[in-house]
Each structure stands twice: as structure tokens, then as C-alpha cells.
Image 1 (cartoon, rainbow, N blue to C red):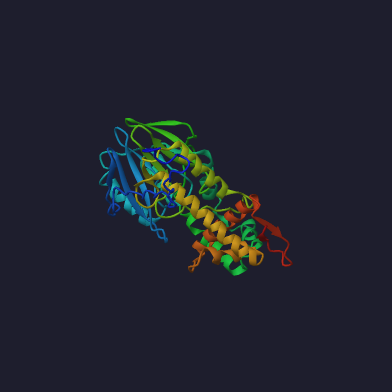
Image 2 (cartoon, rainbow, N blue to C red):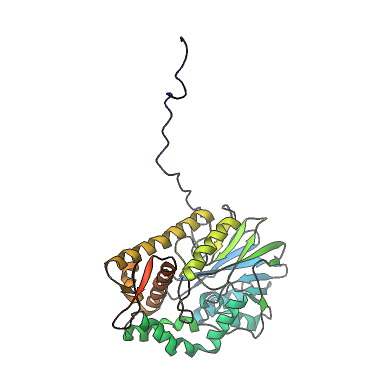
Length: 364
């Protein structure tokens, strides 16, 4: 029939694009960190400062939140002389007329809680922590010699680390855990679901596992501010490690579950204020990148275990290709084991018997 176009059956349809949708890049409002001893206002009444660390990761972020007559401090830095000198300069500057009103320590790692005792001896204010993180930190402070105990040595030896390297890891490799200035005998317990009033703002308390057992994060929904501690970092993945007191634990499973939960609970456009690296926008993008990163490490381990059974120690060079000092070796060993334990639970690996008694795994 004249004028009739092609029928819907024969009409040529546009081909779907085979290219994935572009992933939005992270956005960094501040291209450089605060100068030593200085601060940057990242939101009205919230100051960002950096403290130096004597490690490959050479800094930790701390934040001051306007709390009326003074400042609520988020994290404290390491408990060493250099950090105390940096705080002394702040006593004479930022904190001279407006002191601390409370300290919130996000987790037990000494770069976050190490100077708490030092600061609390100057400012008679409460320490806020989750129960697990407080008790973990207190245990290390009260019994630092336990880090060199036999169960720690057996943990490394059973998974293939040689005796000499094990000796270095449990001594110099664990030394950073002892760089604390103590904790008060009482504290203010914080739980997931709590709401903290800090100045004129309300912060919801979120917690997450994997990097540490019950790490605190703070979310101000009204202003789109998310203090993420070490759970989501812009440029690096936080260390996710199996520990000697829970050698069959599944911290990677806990971490990935936490990331999925955060993706559902926290908006993509929040300003992320992390414990390391720069503040950024693009939370969901970064969460997706972190999940892909850990799955890629699982793939590396799986490929290695297809050719021969491997111990945790034997898998380190397949995942970490650079030279490692004792401090880094301990982290690398425990992170590899976190991936191994996760993969065992998912049926990707299976344990195998070894004549030398070392625990090894093979591809399932």
C-alpha cells in the first residue's frame, strides 16, 4: 500500500551499545592535604589536620568538629614523640582558647588511638569508642608481651613463614601496636544506631568490620558528611587481616559485607572524610572499586593454587610483588590469609595435607 512504512517486525532497530556505562571518577575538593601543623576547613565548623606516621603510609587524618565551647576530636594519631610534639603545637594554637570537649577514637589501631592517653591527661574529657575496639586496645596496652607469645609464633609458622622471618614479625613487625600512651579506665561506649549530638549537628553511628572488629563511622545525613575512618579510602585499600587469636576468622567476608551495607545506607554524593588519603566525593564508585580489587586478589590466589598447593606465606609474592620489611610482611601475610579463609568458605579453595605439617590450600 502506498505510503505504508515498514512493519514493526521488519523495522531495523538500533543495536544496543556494547560499551559499559562510564564510571564517574572520584572528585577531590582539596587537591592537597593541610600543611604540617595546619588545618583545612572541609565543611563549616569541621577542620581537617594531618599527623605524620613513620611508615610507608606516612600520615593519618584527624578531624575537629565544632562542639560549642570547644572541639570534638576524631582520632588522635600515633603514641610517639613526634606526634606529641605536633599536638603541643596545636595546644598553643588551635586548642589554646577552645579545648577538646571529647575524643572519638574510630578503632584500636595505634595511628588512630595511640595518643589518646596523652591527650586525656591534658583534657579531662570522655573517650568514645565501641566496646570491641576499646577492649582490643586496652588488651594490647596492658599485655604488650602477648604479641610475642607462642600462639602468635605458631600462627605464622603453621602457615609457612620461616622461623627467622617469624621472629622478626612478632618483634619488630608488631612494634607499632605498642606505640600507645594508654587508655582511661572508663570510657563512653558507642553502638551502631546511636545518634551523637556534636555542636549543632546530629551524627548517626555506623560500624563496620574487616579492617578492625567494630570500627566507628559517623554520618550527618542532613549535610551529606560521612566520616568513614579507614573503611573506605580513596587511593588504597585498608588492610584486612586474619589475626592470631582468631586464625579461622573471615575478616574479608565481614569487610565486603560492610561495603555492601554502606552502599545501601549512605548516599553516593556525601563528602567522605577518611582516615587516610584525601577527602572525596564518589562513595559508591569507590566501594565498587574496592570490591573489584579484593576479587582480583582472590583470582591471583586461585591461579597460584591451580598449579600447586600453597601456604599463606608461599602466596605472599603472588599478591605483593615488592620487597617487604617485617612490619609490611606481617600485614601482607595476614591479608593473604584473609583472602584464603574467605575463599575456603566459598568453596574456591580446599585444604590439603602436607608432609611437613604446614597448612596449604589448593584450587577446589
